[in-house]
Length: 95
Image (tube, rainbow, N blue to C red; front, side, top):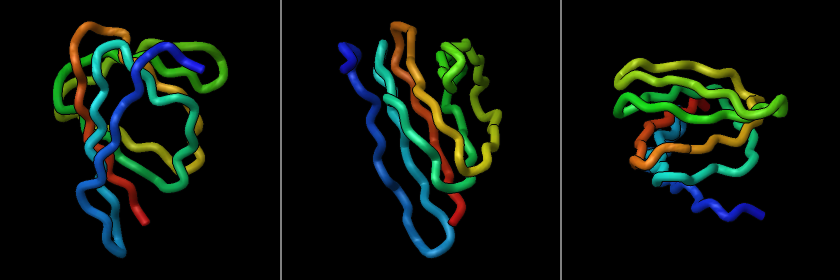
């Protein structure tokens, strides 16, 4: 069990072709371990740094506002916002 607050996922679009989610990462929060069942793209809404653990320990990743990245289905990880600022990402999943 974590003592960190949890991130909040809000579904914005869900149709036959795609699902778009608003991901809100309050300061010091985490996602907990999860698996992505679909291919997806992440769009950072601001410059930020996150900690990502894919089973080999946490690694710092730097994201730039508007610079998207793609991942194949099957990714398993836990993501932490270690900063004192809130972070927003947009996730686009492909069906």
